[in-house]
Length: 134
Image (cartoon, rainbow, N blue to C red; front, side, top):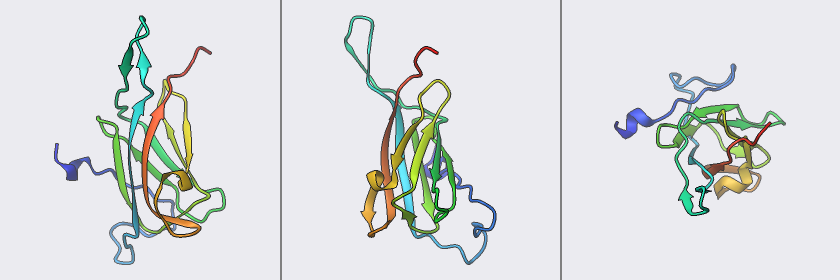
């Protein structure tokens, strides 16, 4: 599958510019990989981590400074999207997948290009733990 087909769609809340309008510009990006935490087999030997496809990646900003972002990781755990604007460092990237515990990372943790109180480029290597017994 080509890189262009792997590119994931960005879902923005109502009222935000749509990808087909000329008012939209690319002002940053988010990219990353989702995998399971390194595991050990029954004998205690390191079994490695595995990519997690179909994980949901959400950008949540409690103060409303950025539009919500919703992505899904591909079959090898990768995700990426262009951002229409820098993201506030106070926002969080939340990653979830049924069968795994949800993880939350602050934008400040994932920021690859800090602009003071905002981030233009985010890069994240997310590790999810399997859900424990209920």
